[in-house]
Length: 390
Ligand code: NZQ
Ligand code: ZN
Image 1 (cartoon, rainbow, N blue to C red):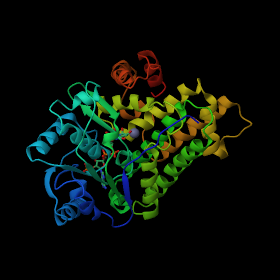
Image 2 (image 1 turned 90 degrees about the vertical axis):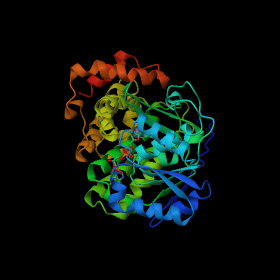
Image 3 (image 1 turned 30 degrees about the vertical axis):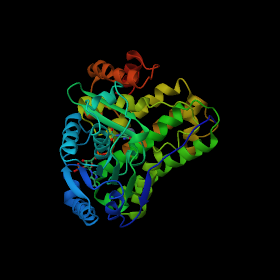
């Protein structure tokens, strides 16, 4: 195990009927909130009313910034920053999923500087300060509620870039699984795929050959993502299943799994972000397209790592008597089958992308590979992976 520092400062309030705590938690950080939320779901479900009431009762005044779309955009972030500055907001409240929380993080960083917020994303400026952020999570998926990352799309340049900074951790996140009863089946599945992908990225790109604690933790999170998702899809209002999925997704990307693994990468996300940027595909749907192809490609470099995952997670169908290569192959097939079973797309052709589109996708992904310093990924290798996803 390699040296590491694990410091996650986000307070989690988890469980039934916890939403009203957003008022008393937010007033600890500021008196005038910019409330960031999405398109329609929070108003339809009554959640928006609950949150605004709790804020007002606690003495927090509210300026609104709704309408965040999935795969959130830079222009909408910029207008949120203008509002936060014009209204003198001293705290940001996010009510939504990863798109809303990421927008809120970008606003919290952009509201305290005079330069354009995109400079953070392209590495031209670093974050030295932010407005405090509190969140109410409405969908289990990204882990943004307990991590320091954010992902925003620049529509002009068609770049979907993400990065992390320790000042972006939310101060507090409220996770009430009941809120996720209204998440439709497709986004429930995409969220589980996303959680799985976060674990897989680190599991596969670990720099350390002996991390048994982390391995078992990660294998458990992958198994639980699949199991909880299956149960949610049988009954969207199954509290225990929603709770399991929500907490699994949070733990999948809160720094814990990567601790001790050395410098890990995020290559499947690097390629997926180009699908979202160019075709506006839901993040989880893009990942279930990329993961199987990437695993085939990666199996030629490290079949044992892929095989280990298969033996431990899909034990029954993958056995020691098979060769390592066969086990790795069975692993990618088993995972793909599960993606199919929850109706998340598993090939580029499923979403109308053909071989002629691959060079443009690779070109786009290469820009993020450079920003993320994934130097092993060239235009050629990205295209090769994409061909395996057709
Ligand atoms: O906009 P509304 O109407 O609220 O609808 C949303 C949206 O259409 C809906 N939804 C959310 N909560 C709901 C609900 N519908 C019914 N009931 C509820 N309770 O779900 C749809 C998707 O929401 P979104 O926030 O886009 O989903 P997700 O949480 O998957 O976030 C995806 C974004 O996060 C980024 C992705 O790239 C993508 O842009 N990521 C952020 C990460 C991070 N900050 O650490 C890591 C991830 O890898 C990911 O890249
Ligand atoms: Zn993700």
